[in-house]
Image 1: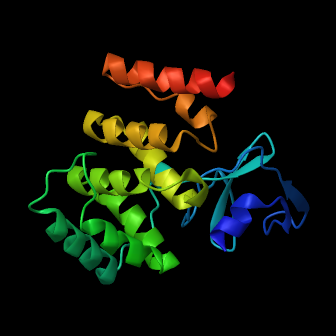
Image 2: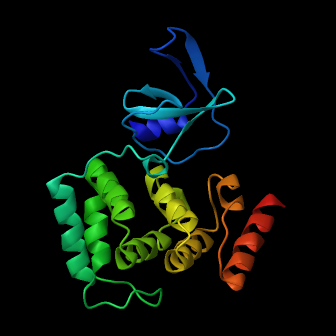
Length: 204
């Protein structure tokens, strides 16, 4: 449901005005759920941010009003963390936890909650492990929430997370919204140059 809204141009009746407003999408962008905000509207649980009449689906972690994690979601993160306990997270090899994520991915809503929970939790090892898993998938099979997960890590400002998320994007050799990358600053000069080279390559 979320991804369908993210990829289509819709006309919806806004509850505050009773008028029909076109939702225009220039490029696919990350999807998310908001609880409430005064900066736009909600449509069936999806927050639409108004920027010069362009309504964009936004990430919940750019808003302080987050959906609450259930106990089951928290347990999933704890189970996943236990699978990483004895591992050194790097890009050199495939890991046993890939199977865990692949099976979890079959349950769309649980998987989305897991990704957002990992972002909110902020554990470096968990985030980087998920980045590695996503980096091994072809970009054409990456969904909007997975792409958003990686973009949020890159924008996070933590150098450890930025390294892994950037390598993931470079492995994909693609991104839906190139503009999302232009504001990213990485403290490491070599990583920043890699990011700028990628942007330049995609713009040419």
